[in-house]
Image 1 (tube, one colour):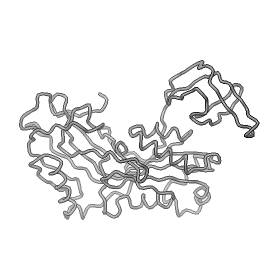
Image 2: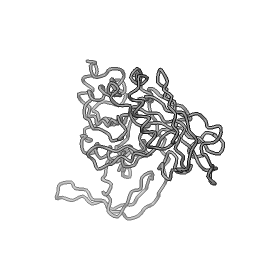
Image 3: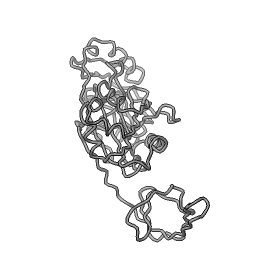
Image 4: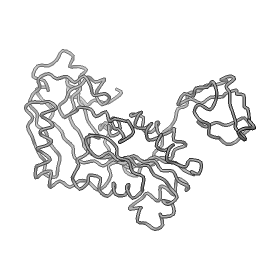
Length: 348
């Protein structure tokens, strides 16, 4: 928590519970009347006590990313961080049971993905957009059948000949005022963001840090899609079809999220992260005076592996799909309404 005393020009850091009787709410800015006590023992120990909340304003925070690459499309729904967990931090991935052809109420589509509508569906063709496309008929449209087809596809020559992209689909970086801001930028997975923040508080030497930044990188692999069902997706339409959405495409890929604390300014961190940075001698001084926490999510478990080196980040960027050993996990999806095959747009 950042505080600035009256007649002072600079903010200072106070623990979240550092003002007796005051509970801070994220996204608010306060003017407080407090009692300040400086104790002789321990030396210069400062205690604060709330006397009155003079003003309480909701602060609208504008999130600003420095975007290096963003090839995402407007109708793609980003689910790359929504269900992730972290290895060894009691943060279990909440992996959704989703597949192309699945139908959900619009209020759970791309959020909880629960309450799947499991009525009998028409057979559908699945298309895997490899260099040589793979087409598979799914007669029994349900999760188990979809999983069987995925296993068949991974053994196919079309998949074996597929060359995974070497260029990120999304790559962006932002400067953080404090570790508290992590939850503003990863706002669709509170536990995941909280764990990353806790790791930063545990590992970083914040008092000797000049700049803090958060990075996100996504590599897109392949997309599975289905034809628009001209006769409807269900054999017999349910009574509530107006509010149902079917999953028309799933895009698989891998992702990385990382925190950097550095003794160098943010602009020098940005310069150091461009290109194959680990082996560049001109970046050595900056990297040697910076710390990194790297979380990489590379498979269907959606559980992040933890690393603490810039070399590990470079290795991920060089080989995000582990030479084809993993195809990743669902990072984007598209939905269409059952009633008329119009595109589902979250929040509308």
